[in-house]
Structure formats: structure tokens, C-alpha cells
Image (cartoon, rainbow, N blue to C red; front, side, top):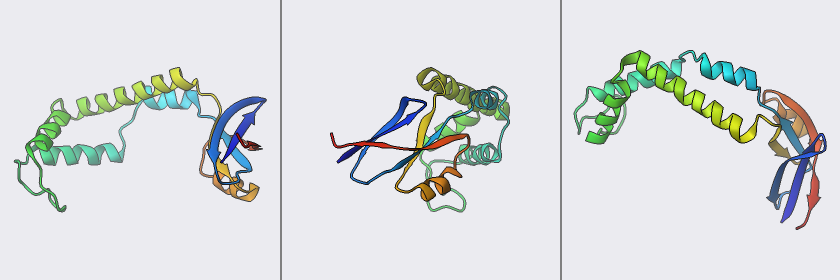
Amino acid sequence: MNKFIARYNGEVVGTRRSPRPYKFAIIAQDDEAAERDAAYNYVPTQIDKANWQYHETRARMQPGDHYPGYNFTVNAKDVAEARKQIEHGWDGFIDRERNRRIGYFETKKAETGFRPFVAAWSLTHPNAVKAARKFRRVLEIVPVETSTN
């Protein structure tokens, strides 16, 4: 098994062990300011609305009821969890989501400091270029170092 090392600006930003012969690493860096803004100024999404409706529907159900349109029944734990999710209304639901995202942002900031990282490993440069399109803020595609220990 080979060990692969990716460097960016002289610093190791990622390592990986694999039997595959990786040759390139896609180096990316998350945008701290954008992520802070997205967390602290959170705007509800369509997914939030769908989740709210899901919890609202389950909260009105009784244990043993079939969830509309799906092949499962809710139990007492499901109903209690749904009621807890909506107990403070839509604003409370969104406040909880905002706080969850703020917590995630602060944890990420403390743990990684938004340093560059390996977003993906690739066997060929053309595949690395193609894969890099999936990521925001790609800094560079770098050749990797290989060692056998």
C-alpha cells in the first residue's frame, strides 16, 4: 500500500494510503467570510420548509398511523420528536437551525482554521481538472508525492 502526500505552498495539506496509484490532488480552501455570513445571517431554504412540513405532519399523528405517501408507520418516539421540533413554531425551528449552523461554523473554524485541504485525489490530470469543477474555491491541482511506508 502506498502513502500519498499532497503539499501546497510547501506545507503538507493531506495524506492518504491506498493501493491506487494517485498522481494528483485537488487543493481547495473554504471561504471563511462566506460561511460565517451563511451561518450568522441564515435564510431558510426550501429544505427547511419541507422538513417543517414533515415534522408538522408527524406531530399530528398517533403512534401506529401510516405516514401519508410512504410505507412506514410512526411510533411514539417519532411523534414526540416531531412535536419537540415544532414546539416553538416556525421561528423557533429556524432559530435552532441557525444555531446549529453557527455551531458548525465555529467548530470548523476552531478545528481547521479554514486552511487549504485536499478536496479529492486523482489518477490523471484530466480527471483532476474535471473533478475540480465540483468544488468551490479550488486553489490548485498539485502532483502528489508517493512513499511505500
